[in-house]
Image 1 (spheres, rainbow, N blue to C red):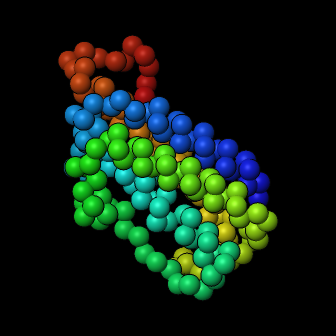
Image 2: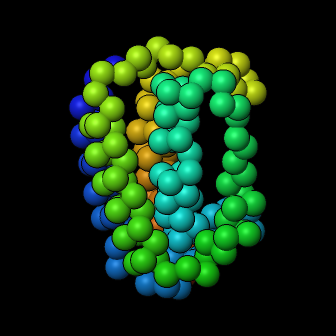
Length: 169
């Protein structure tokens, strides 16, 4: 596991996320294409919660507290119960970026780690390295989601004008 490569990727991802959402007007930040979708603001707050409550903790448990037990996360429920869509986008983004910087420092401080260390999960054993790889991939998954949200909002906001001239989405 090349932790430095992952740290660089995570730093770049956080900058890409910043660029995707910074300055987004509130109307767009809370907009959803349908009732089951998340808004831009909900995605950013999900990223914040995952940064604080998920990946770092799971890696720490796999490396240092094997057998600590699997804690359950429910992102859909958290979005509602924690009022993601009522928050301020700028503040949520700043909190995510600060938490990400802390995570990148934390990864550097791990030093030599056994990335093959296993942790039990409801779906079977998973390595600490799998958690780290998933962390960086999770960013990209949600960057794709943010781009789709921006596209859908733009298409709806510009109606009745059509964007087909640019090609197929």
